[in-house]
Length: 101
Image (cartoon, rainbow, N blue to C red):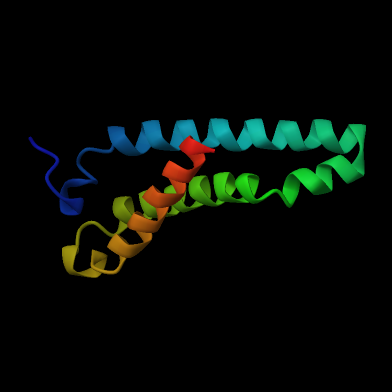
């Protein structure tokens, strides 16, 4: 079957599984980087956390996980997904900024 809309997202959850794995890999990598910087210098860790590009990176991944959960659990009622398109659009923009940064 074709994946032609959010109402079919639950049946094709292989997209969700791969997205979640990649997102958790990124979050673990970020946590290890932060831990390494914190053990080296608290000032470096604080500067890393307040970096605009790092904030965009983490926000993009968190929003990606959020949109994935919304599509997985609320896809049985397509009319409830109308406003999630805006959140998905913002997520895609943040992911592009992450890719370019």
